[in-house]
Image (tube, rainbow, N blue to C red):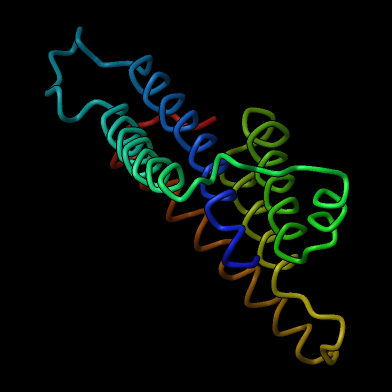
Amino acid sequence: MKPENMPKADFITSILLMAFGIWVLVHSIQMPRFENLEANPFSVPGIVPGLLGVVIFLLSLVVFLRSLKQKGYRLGINAAVIANASKDASMQRMLVTILVCSFYAMGLIGRTNYYLATFLFVLAFLLVFQYRQSQKQQALGKLIALSVLQAVLTAGAVGAVFRYLFLVELP
């Protein structure tokens, strides 16, 4: 992305991230608090997501204010800008990231075992972004093997942290 377009990108991205931060905070407040068990308020499952939501919102607010100062609200969107953006490699990677993450959140989570869903998500993400068509067959085999190993370890570690440390019941 060209440096002169960064304030515009910051403007749009910060608005989306502020909305996401608020969404995370609202949903973390709605999580069970275990009041009937007289649990310590700092051990409830929603505390970490709530704090993360607040941090995401505050940091996005800083980026938003900086983009306003740099006149990022002057978007100048037209057909040529949209056509050029669709050809940009970083924009394509961002769209693929959004698609893979959306499929994980809306297609896998809640419909399959959490560990399997996370394994498939991490594996797909690694393979999509690390694969190069120019790779030799041996390098491709190594990439797949390492990606499977990373996906297994990540799914296990993340699942264990949520289940045993944050006390979140996983689907």
